[in-house]
Length: 149
Image 1 (cartoon, helix red, strand yellow):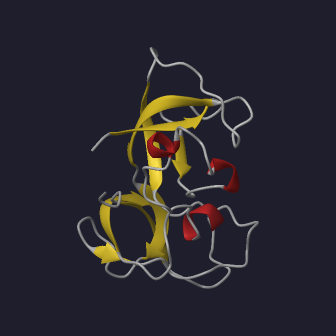
Image 2 (tube, rainbow, N blue to C red):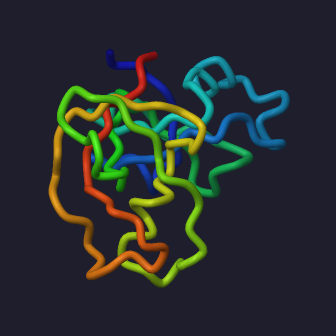
């Protein structure tokens, strides 16, 4: 389902993804609040269209203003435990990882996903980008379905 919202002009490109963080302190009293604060906090979104007819609007949060875009919930690539990981099954993230230098870290702690939630696997991507897991976890890189709106 596509939703029209406002994003900072620097982010307003088709294909760009972001995690909606909710209202900022600068949003108070803004005349565009209803158009801007209409997404689900913590969810990941992908921009599918930038409204070309729209103008750049002033914004107290985004230095260069905001533009109207169409977004849809985006799937999340993540590492999950290999046992039971197949397309259509449900999985949870394996838990926090302190090894931020690991090439798999962005997939072990992906933006837009929570550790205490279950997600449906839409696709098996393959092996994680690391050679070995420093926490000795047996992981598979998958694509998790976008959360429903």
